[in-house]
Length: 189
Image (cartoon, rainbow, N blue to C red; front, top):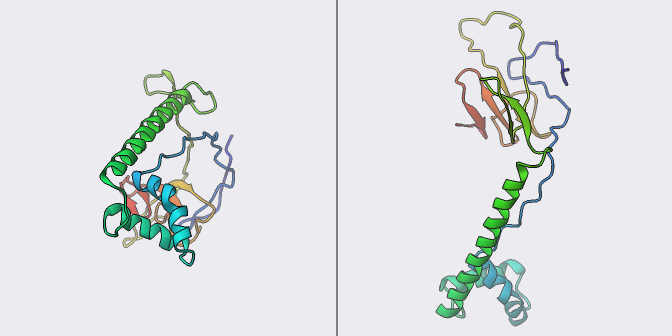
């Protein structure tokens, strides 16, 4: 049963939006690990803020970045830097393992996988979402100077329905019939 049926005229860069939300099952991804610089900033921010109470948070963090890279005195020693790099690498390994476990677990979650019928008639479980579009006939024949293009895609609520097609801005992604390419932010793939 269709979620949206539209029998009016569209075209000339006019779009139709189905207001039915695309339901995604929330999956909590592990938090990305900090870089060595972020670890250094966490450890030293309070100390520098106390030394310079009139500095803004941005100025403190910029100063710590310069110290870390050696462009300003007072940065970490080679040994401290090596320890920060080791700590960041350990956190990255933990993150990678958690992310891999999350992705592996997603395959066994029936809310995240969908049954799909393959071209050979086999039913497979794959982590996809599916939608279908049926287009009837064009309202009129194109004139000699016109090039017809149908674009189908996904968009956020911030996407304007007049004057653009899905994929022309950062609020949408779409596939265009004139060249068969996917577009996002007006960059084709």
